[in-house]
Image 1 (cartoon, helix red, strand yellow):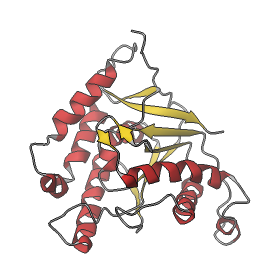
Image 2 (spheres, rainbow, N blue to C red):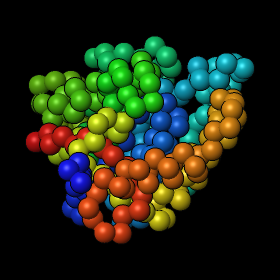
Image 3 (cartoon, rainbow, N blue to C red):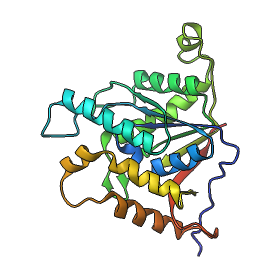
Image 4 (cartoon, rainbow, N blue to C red):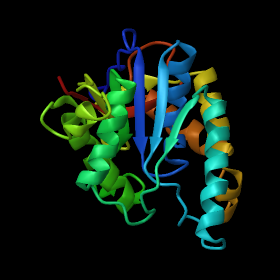
Amino acid sequence: MSDHLPLFEDADIRRVLCVVAHPDDMEYGGSAAAARWTARGIEVSYLLLTAGEAGMRSRDPEEVATLRAAEQRDACEAVGVTDLSILDFPDGLLEPSLQVRRAIARRIRQTRPDVVLTQTWELEVGWGLNHADHRATGIATVDAMRDADNPWVHRDLAEQEGLEPWGAAWLLVHGAEPTHLIDVTGEPLQRGIASLAAHREYIAELGGDFDPRSMLEGMSAEFAQRTAEPGVEHAIGVAVHRMV
């Protein structure tokens, strides 16, 4: 096939920071990659910019924020992620502002990752029109990666907090047109499915007959058809950008 994609080489990766807008955003494939990485001894941190408090129409936002944080902790446990940060930017109103960029840059300098994974900023995506918060998160993360590496941007992070500049080598964008695949065959996919299923009450709120297993198995099997590497039965696609 002419559209075969290479696997992303993660043998030398030591730390990964995943930046998304809401609880459950990592779980539509990204958490299976996180499960692969944690099983290999890679340190994986999650940064959620909002608590997803506006995501359930039937419940008050304060109640929802607490509920979704608890479900996200369960989702993290399923894939071996112990470092979870949830910020309090407003769900549904997120912008790629200097404040948001600074918050992401701070976390990059704190965790010092080799890889930053985020969600696509494109308006039109495979499942329809992308959420405003997702688009803002992707754009803010790209800018924050450069901010984190620049000693003259957000100078207070170094001067007041002791957080020296850090340049992550790779940006991985989930949901974009992929340039590479991540092999999640076997246990990583199963743990990824469990992490999505952990968002029990949120999924129930969505209604319909949504099935985490069939969705993730089907999506990852389709991606796996785009590699020539033997033994890859399930994969997720990412757009890979070299940053330094």
